[in-house]
Length: 334
Image (cartoon, rainbow, N blue to C red; front, side, top):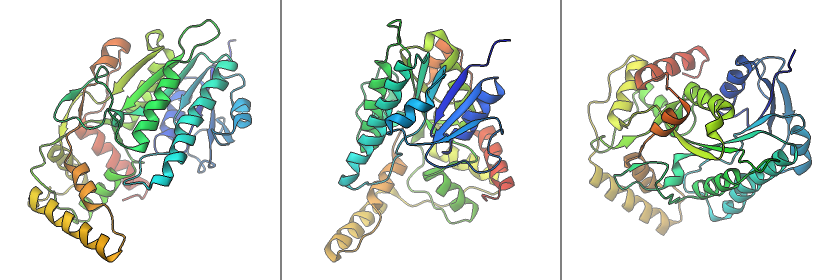
């Protein structure tokens, strides 16, 4: 009887990690995880091998890599709004240095495939264009730049037979029951009637449901055509902000907000508040940056992975948010 291939998943206790663990376990793989924090009880099956370690620790990574068939590399320092300049070194140490350590250890251990979870943020501002894998990246944050640098390390990786072993998945905005960041705040604000949109809401967004991300990861490990390639991973559609807000509200069982704030006066007020805060020495959130982020247009094409690997998103915007909200309520998050 052949032994099931062993998959190493770094950063497995993050927002997406447990779904990836469970998807590979359900597909018949043996799974080993490596994270900074121990997993909450019951988050994945008991026979998943759990290791606590840092991806920048060479000895810990080498030990975790023994006997591994493929690696799913999720561990990273994630996006932070308006990070201080002194965080740049930390981003580089974890996102670039950590990826280099993982890839070098994988090559030395004879790993067949290394899959990096990256982000469509590497493209930078879209200026109204539809972005594809051929669009030159223009990262404009520490996070995006270091993820782009990590991509290069993975795509250049070669195995013992000199063949490419790396695959990069540039994920759209991932949402689901363990969603964090902007969408988590949006859900809670809408649920408690504390949200008022800004502008017309016709700017586009590119999303993907977390369970579809898990299916993309399975294909990236198993499909021969994935080696040495990068793919955008999306639900195959572009969604206006109004459509996203409407889908979340429908899943919550409430009506979308009827009123919205006009964009330009909101920007002028934000600029005035920030000028006052600088003059008085008060530390306030970067309001202008938050509004710009809210109103940006992000349209990323996800056709290539569907054509090349046969990836088929199972969730659209409505079904994804319905399931996510239902699970959040079941887990007590709402």
